[in-house]
Amino acid sequence: MGLDYFRDRLFDLLNDSEGMGIADLNTDEPNGLLIVRTEDRNVFEIVCQQAAEKEGRWMTAN
Image: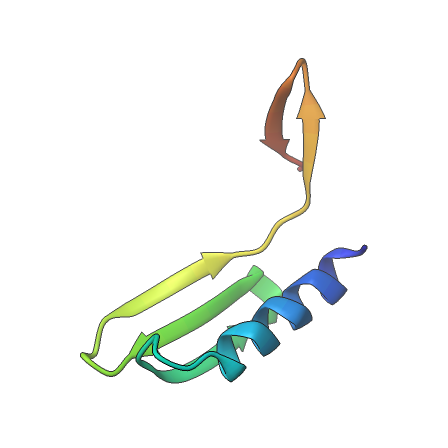
């Protein structure tokens, strides 16, 4: 599964979710972000980056 596919599916899951109180959902593709605004006006940024295992730990790939 590639990063773009994963990000698109995550967007779809959040967009179709009920009961989470999501008022708006946007993407900032150049920065790999999903931006979520909730009904109570909180804003969250979800960073989508490819990660790789390094010595038994997950590290962000550069």
